[in-house]
Length: 437
Ligand code: PA5
Image (cartoon, rainbow, N blue to C red; front, side):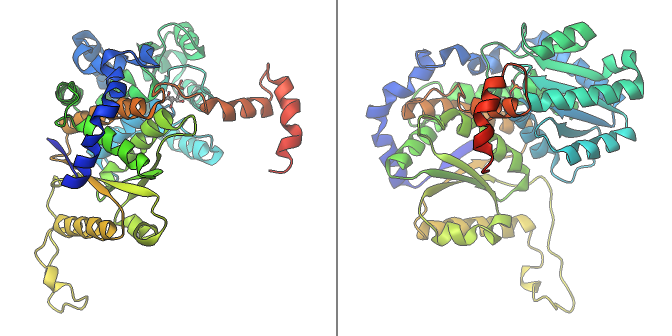
């Protein structure tokens, strides 16, 4: 189960806005809002067919057998969802095989060389994911990895090790996959990148990590059922109302934080989902992610006493999977015997409650999303909860949740600067402007 804990007074204030905001929020279920050609994600939990799931599982099994490491190549919505689920389930320090590592999510040359060096000594496979098939970061990374793979295993054997996930019809990756004869999975036309974790974009890497994709979809399906009606039992709706209420109160930032590092990439995924969906037309809460207690020693001072720009959402796990007790020490030199026998999670929980209280007393409104267990079902629930909340929240805000026109600006400059054919005029135009950078 997932619960959304918030003080009765805040909840009441947010719910009071229902009359005003319900019509805008209902654009999601009536499919009448802007971007309504990208609503395919809504029914993915129910409509993902058995044949597709069987194919995903078979491919995952093949890659698992062939590989010590599987490299997932993608950026933004084409990789964050898988990384969120895999990190949440495996933890940071896992040595589970195959290891899942990432490429094409940035352009660092040293990262790429470290990766190649590592792959020289390991058996590996590559899952390359790009809906447009033309995004420069994954495209370049894949070119390098494809060449490495073919040199290492030969062209024919590489075909077993490379899987492409892309558009059904268009894009350079689609053309390349068809010509090379790679196994391919389709990202449906009506599902955008950041809403694609429950398509093969997320399902294949998650299955390769040995995780239960049926349970993930079952969790999402449960959550879908519970968010269908716009009432105060609908967690996504209440969260969306609260977010817009805080904007109305002058907040410009939502800080999402957790006392469990396993949520780190879920928070990264959340940042992308909300940042890219809502940050347009000069609107939208800036989504910021922190990890406690780590960041209490870097941002704690600001959170307690800095500008009151933000509200804070805590994402908590009710109980960890394992037990770790603080041992008794005969000489008690560190003075910690008063904690002997306590579980670390108990200390962490008290740190969380203490932090929430301190921040509230420092004038920060707080929400808490509590998750009963870290398993695929709950992660499916969480994913769907946030996706649906994001659609509702953006429509209440008055923006199209499903486009990202602003992302093109840096791309155009970069293409001009690397002299991509067709960008010659832009190249001339920005030469004088980059001198001062
Ligand atoms: O949410 C989005 O649409 C984006 O973050 C994309 O996922 C990201 O830009 C990668 O795009 P593509 O899958 O086309 O390479």
